[in-house]
View 1 (cartoon, rainbow, N blue to C red):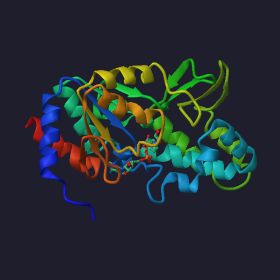
View 2 (spheres, rainbow, N blue to C red):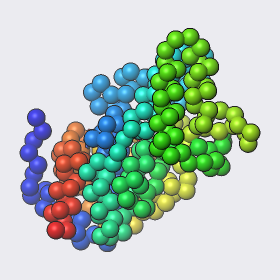
View 3 (cartoon, rainbow, N blue to C red):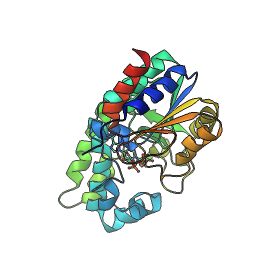
Length: 272
Ligand code: NAD
């Protein structure tokens, strides 16, 4: 059972949020857990089933395509389907609400676009987005998918998990996001292990972290570098750092619990 929320810590966090002139929200997979998108490192998490040394690099994925196409289809489906089906939860909406009260920059490691769909207007996606298709070298944006397009792709990938000709069916299924078209090769705009972070979002995120006076770190294990350095940059520049996470603490204040429970209470305490 989770420990009850520390009321005094909530009061202090609400005070920092109310007084702040510039806020950064640094979010990870945990902020979207209550939207049905699994995190990667929690118990029974994604990486247990799909080892990152294979599935978190482009080379590993290419090798899996030739050796274990059905398993690769299962991996692609496990990534895309929950994102295609997800809706913003109370945590995303509470963050958007802070943005209606004062300048907020959301720096997210997530690829699910849920902050934008909840109404946050300044969102930096340092690990890219599942909804964006770019040229093979990542330099040129090709197009942005709609949620229903992503749902259709997920359904076709699901069918490629079974039966023969799995690789051929998978390649056809993912053609809108990965493959070769008339304007050259394209791929999803995702930052995998060993890739540089998405620009200009990463440079803008560093600047925002150094200029904010309050940073909320929400639902991140803080293990994925260099993104995980954002709270430390803010702290070194003098910001108050508030962590919201049921499992991982840190920063000046740790509000222990689920983001969808804590954030609406924090925002209500700060502004109502
Ligand atoms: P992580 O899996 O390493 O850590 C998840 C964190 O969320 C943990 O600290 C956990 O205690 C916390 N958490 C779990 N449920 C929570 C809840 N209800 N409320 C608040 N916190 C909760 O995730 P990470 O640090 O973001 O690193 C994983 C990488 O994988 C990221 O870089 C991200 O790009 C990617 N990822 C993205 C998504 C997504 O787009 N939704 C989902 C999974 C992974």
